[in-house]
Picture 1 (cartoon, rainbow, N blue to C red):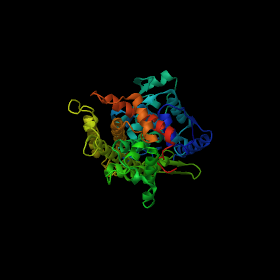
Picture 2 (spheres, one colour; picture 1 turned 90 degrees about the horizontal axis):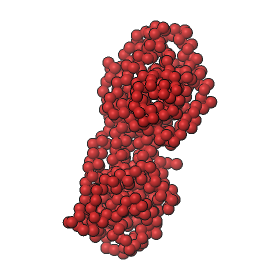
Picture 3 (cartoon, helix red, strand yellow; picture 1 turned 120 degrees about the vertical axis):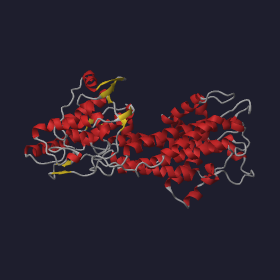
Picture 4 (cartoon, one colour; picture 1 turned 135 degrees about the horizontal axis):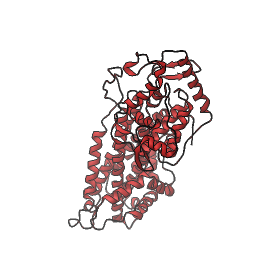
Length: 512
């Protein structure tokens, strides 16, 4: 993969995060980086007063720093900002963060030397993963503490994972044969100022949520079959008169998944008038989530190629601007929307699970989907787990972006809480992934009691795929392994791919 500061995609971020691609610098980016650095060097030669280059930082912006102290200033900045706490980010999240930081530098507005960018890419390609504690950012000047921990390894300090071992950052660099960088003027500030933690975590959470959205459509279609629901609410005529894009896309997905269903055909003339909202309103609820995810994707597609430093260097205009591009509010707000939208997918999924548990709502399925009620508990506790997860999400979905707390002696008096918003959104997505997995587990079990009739093509495909790994529940057994197997099938994309092989591509969770 080649980066130039302009054309990175969410899919690129995912590939690098997963270790599926190496990264190289585009030749077109080299002159941009060199011009910006040359301008910074000229400012130093002219003894200009420029924030973070010849002054202190934050509240110390008015304090001049002698030219001979420029190197110590940048090193001190990085080390002093290594104040993160808690468990480290996952390797995938940290690799995504490294890629995004490199892409910002490649944009040519940071004023770093080309050697700094090349060293960062060497680390990424060699498998050095800095230990970045997940707590400690308020999204003020971006993600200062997390990026400082990342940068510490670049200069031979801090800690890193290398070949699975946690070690001193300098030792990891030495083991990989990479020479640490001695930071020069502006470079420490350029490396730690920006939104790369919240954007990295957010991009991976979005990718997972988009996959969950498709899996939720599949699970809903299977529940319709298990509960002997109807596909009438999904007909195009209804959605034509309320044309929200996500709603219409979900309805089309459900119709395609239910095509050629013998189960639906068997009860066309039954006495039921309406299905429960969790079936009937799936296009409206899933669709609202799709539209929200489309908004989040739009924000992140801009941010992954954005210059979020302070100050920004514009050599052609001969300007250095102290602005606010580091502020995480766009990402924080988008992450809160992601958490809310994904939580709603879990909420309605849990309601369909409950419908399958209760004979009064399941159209004569046995209680808790067990062949031996009383002797066996069946899937009783699986629904309880789903209820626990969606209840947790109701707290996690409270917006982080509406909070602020002043820092840096009130110089940073309005902050975004973007890192927390992103981590929270990711936790919501992980919870919903398991709720949808439980719905798939219950729906597959429900279909065992409609065994004389074939479900729709898409539902048959997912049922067959589930049964390759998870056998029907004939007698009670631990359900955690089954839930985790199905969760992994959603997470790695194999479940959606198997269904799409049968019915064609399901409509995306974002506007194409």
